[in-house]
Image (cartoon, rainbow over all chains, first blue to last red; front, side, top):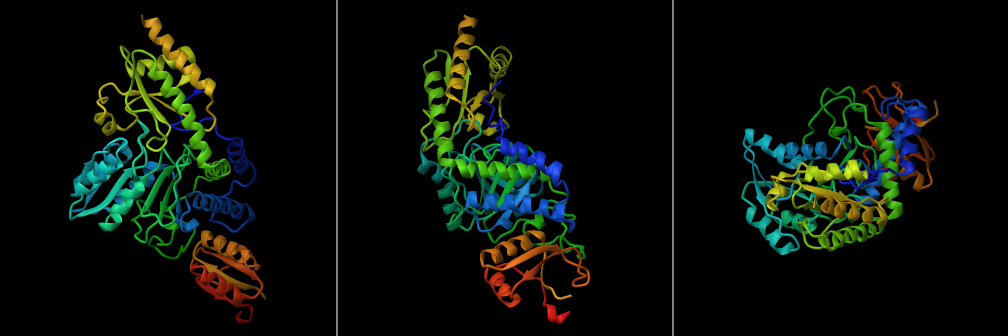
Length: 383
Length: 75
């Protein structure tokens, strides 16, 4: 299988990740932060190491500000529902995932409203201006994706966050598609909350996500329960990360995520980004020369795009193309709306969807060539 | 008992404090807080192998909150 569905989750994972998952189950599969025996403490050390490495990668204040979550969606829900109250207003970009839109739609029921600021591809000034124009006197939170999970378009999140800070608005960035690929430095950053998946560009197993709190304003927690700390108190502890981590953590996957983050630190985001961008440009250039292939964005210049590409073939539905690629060529892509109907609406593809190809650190030029050859054959065969 | 203990609200803070001390040349060990030194429910402590006053000073300067100090001579 040629796996180019890395936007959904990366595959394969580094050997160190697989080994760490197995080792945690085989050698120290105890409940971290609950008991005092050696295995439990070893498990707690592993979880702490994951926080520490994440704090190194994102240059955040402290390991305890790294909250380990089941996925990016839970992290985003925590910020959105933990910050916004009835009467508040939020602003999001026009490229947001349903992980942002659906919680906000739910909050409409209690009197939270939100506006959509249009992202103008390759024009940061215009995008920032659209955010500025969307602010109201009751705007409490901006939630903005770092890059579209459909078209790869990057948003100037640092500048948007700075604009928020000037206006007394909190800023949450969804880095699901960029963590481990783009440079994210929270030192002196105005980003208040960074949410990301652990199983995409961070190469951890599925079932992992991170919420990094870079603000003194701490959201309310969505759930309450046992944390292995301050147990005599009947109310939820306010200390981080315990406030947000009730219940037994997913130790095997956290152990894997820890190794995935180390893999990214060792390889560096710069190298990963540059390598993937070379492949993405190869794919873009190849597709742009094939008649009847539809591309939706300009050439993926590294300044404005993260390595994510959407395309279609005239005369085929996106699901049809992806299905043929899978069954006839063993090439894995993702078709449809990618849980991001707003982004598709902006590009006029909300009715047909797109085929998405996303690279990883394990993708190769020959895989790109095989995809290009497959697309040509699909078009030729149809004729 | 002749141990010096520093009590923390969570295992995360206890491990973090241990790492800060290690970087400053003080060895310590994370343990589940024994009931005999604190009965406020689950917490974790560091057993300090060194000067506890210096350890407290280093940890407090690093911004980690200590929830209890049990010096050997106070037990």
